[in-house]
Amino acid sequence: MDSGAVTVARTGTVRGELVLRESGGHYEVISNGVFLMDTRAGESERLLVRAALDAVPPGSRLLIGGLGVGFSLAEAAASPRPAEIVVIEIEPALVGWHRGPLGRFSAGALDDPRVRVVTADIVTWLAGTDERFDAICLDVDNGPDWTVFDTNAQLYGGDGLALLRARLTPGGVLAVWSASASPAYAARLADAVGPVETLAVEVARGEPDVVYLARQKARDRV
Image (cartoon, rainbow, N blue to C red; front, side, top):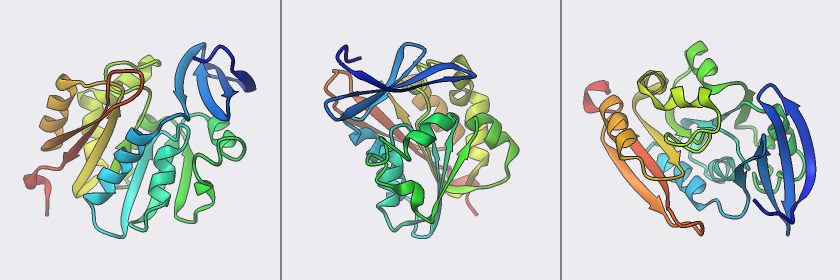
């Protein structure tokens, strides 16, 4: 976290305090004093979406779990491939910041007619909908092995994987972002969904970001 950063916005949420800070034209999001994300990189978040869209046909429906600082949404909206892009984001304040200082990082994609933003907890929303998607891109918290919020851990367990799989169309793909390699999660993902491709992206902090791309097993296809 940059000690020279200036607080741009601060808000209270049911999960505690959420702060947006700026330094040198870049922004970082802090939750209860814990760094969540910033705008200084983004290649792995873009890869998350690009790899998923490359695996599905034009006209597909895409679900993005987690708006973050907007890299994933910007990548999706820049592609002509998805016919619909649904973004699930739990924090209304974060969505609002994309109407302001974070808007250039999501490339104004909130105004794309293909984009629908739902402010909700993703587990609750997935459990309460019957919508299905050709591709799901999951970027919630810091991935399977380091969650700031304990409630997010369920998304990466067996029940969460079953819920995500149920929201895929036959032959759909699930792409999952992680702040570090997680062989145990990759094994669970392969067992629950199908063959997994592991894509690593070098980052300045040292340990690579990882994108796991799982394709539904042949028996699930029609």
